[in-house]
Length: 133
Ligand SMILES: [Zn+2]
Image 1 (cartoon, helix red, strand yellow):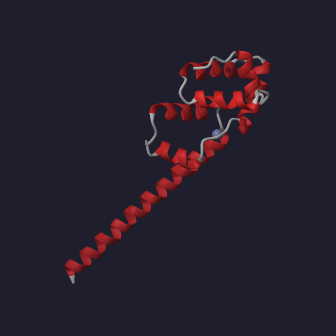
Image 2 (cartoon, protein in one colour):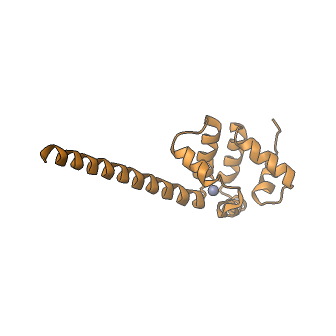
Image 3 (cartoon, helix red, strand yellow):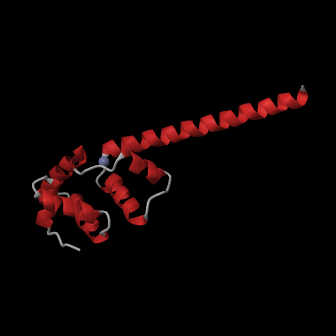
């Protein structure tokens, strides 16, 4: 595991870290709880510099998981590391884009369930008719 300094993390959040290093960092975020803690701490600082950084980050600078990944997340089909990373992305980064995406997916899931139960209901009615005819 690579160690990143606070300075590097701040540069990363501000999108001033070299691309290769950023890629490595994002990769490691998915598996490295300590690194997530380190970032969380930087984002949690209440000095104005940190607040500004957090603001930049929340505007979606950190690459977002894809919609299908969120869909897997809802279905409970993700491994621990990735799931924790998604929770981190959602709760600590406070990514509004992904939060909206997730709500949307949840509503869609609800609609699917509705359709299923309606279909089941129709089938039951059909069966009842068949019995009564
Ligand atoms: Zn996001």
